[in-house]
Image (cartoon, rainbow, N blue to C red; front, top):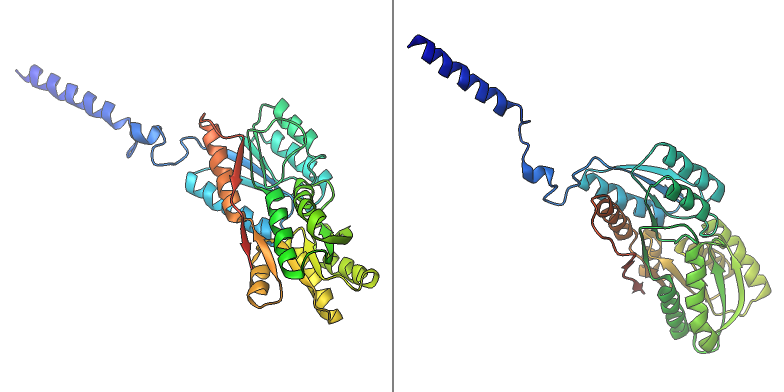
Length: 307
């Protein structure tokens, strides 16, 4: 009888030991990733064109918040608006064997080789805000820059009138954002405005100021300005206010400084591109792709005119 009791006790201990091998709180639901959380501990590299621009700072913040929410690790590198540095940064991410690389290109043409390097290493790539001219990408998340340029031209025309002389401050040469915004703007401007000057200010506020000063000297009678981003628009605005002239300025991005300038009646409008949402949607697409889910090749983010 005692031997039978001892046998039952040993059997019960074995059952309890087997049950305790499952980690506390673990379940088949958690393993499947239910509830929108990433089921794997993914590391996502993010090469940002520059973190010296409020738009990209906000975009990066949106990406970081979404990565934390989904349980993914986001490794962010700042290209500092240097295409060569960006290529080197992306090679470093490849060497680190990250699971996926998100790229916000400095130069759409120059970044193609880096995208192809990631392709060769079997690391998927997602482009953010600006596209790559070569290589294979899982998805491209951005606003419709061409439509935004058209929106800006229509708004500027409504302020300065048909046929008015205007200037265009262009972004970084080679970037898809500068190319597309310019295409959209000039498509409408060709029929409704007289673009008497256009010059790059590299998406930079201080360059926007100096370039605008030069344009004002050569073209004192212009009535309006379209800048490919708000930093250049705000720089141009400084030059215009210093000159005492009444010239309408429309920007692009709806950064906090630009929106405040619109509210204060200094800036005549800006196209809202919602950078935080772009960052969030990029990370969502990245995790979905890593989870084996189908992701749209192009994911648009809606635009809005702030005036």
